[in-house]
Image (tube, helix red, strand yellow):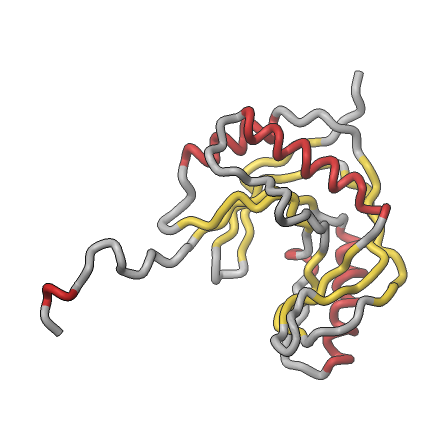
Length: 200
């Protein structure tokens, strides 16, 4: 192919290698119970999808972006400032349904969702969004166009299923964390954790 047909700026963007997000995690006992449920649901569908291991179960509060070649220092610093500014009391979360994020006929994530029991997560999500804006995080990370749906992903690549109630999975949220996701390597590294404390 003649070289003059190559157009600068149209080459494929670099593959993202690192993700940044805020999250909360269930306690060890709750994570083990959720993991057991995920195993049962995967066995029921008889697909090859593997449930997430207990240590990877979490609720994403805000996804701050995926990046190529490492995390941008300015983004991490702004997220750190935002996280440190949050003042909020601990709260209880309750997930009482299993739902599908798949789009027929394509497979997708199988997740835990909740109703009124996830109100605290909505509040923390909103507080972090406002804090990020004040901390100088460049991108708009809270969009009203895509409503926030707190969920715990149980497994990926699952066929679509109708939502159904389950025995509730509850835990007390006493802290949240800023996480570094090593994309494609199924590893999450905590960059910082902040406790939720009662006001004075």
